[in-house]
Image (cartoon, rainbow, N blue to C red; front, side):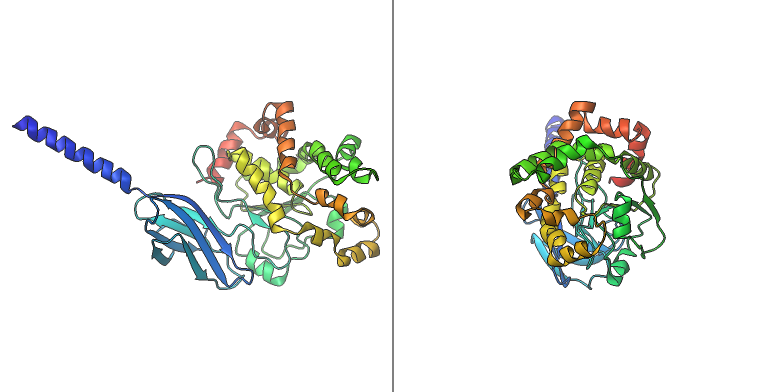
Length: 371
């Protein structure tokens, strides 16, 4: 009789354990978008099981703990629209099931009036299941046209360090006059002129007989030269990350090549899968109309009126050949990574060897930038 009772108890405990497991809700994905007029947020997510109840809350603090934010809604839907309070506040959202791990999300592209491709590197999952923190590292293009409203928004981010990868001529042409709090603003020695680099990336562009496909292939062939040319700036950037000088922002001019390579290296160092790294790189084409940004009549007039303008040469070329130069084609960063792997064994080996990122630095960076 006692044996029978013991068996029944064991079966009962096993059943409870199985039930507990099946009741755990997993949030598969989460995304936040802001309408063009910044009037509404749209949050969307998926859960497993489908239709599970979640709690939604927000905070201005990217490091807020779910359950400690401002409550918005509890719902079993998979999307939610919420009115925003304009462009002057950045919101970080937590979507939390009753039983299971919460997920944070935020609008990736900052809603700036005069910025170019200013976006957050947070939210990406690493190969070991951790997640890049929102609100700690930002990538951007030129900042010379940031407005008073933009600086009001940026002042809430607490950015401490800016690494500007542009050369002196670019900085002189479009100077950054940061007005969102005290920062350690860094710029670096102009990279030495490299005939091999220019031959790889620009030979087809300047060849009157070349095709747009030739230009694309030349861009891909020379793309790893960006990582090597920017060693001074990238080394300083990783040193600041290891020293905890965050939030940190980095930029170039277009915000897609030097900044895109820097972002790809950071995400790789954090353990983000290469497929995700490539997808983040390619987002620049979704966020910016580069032909309009660089080839508009206004930009032409500006280039013609400015002696030694860094982009004047673009207007001497057919637009169909300029388009690959201004693109963020996945093949560019894929080829760059393939070249680095061939030379160093892995992209991480390049980071550690050439950018002087030690094992201890990696631990510090991951500890401060991953949840």
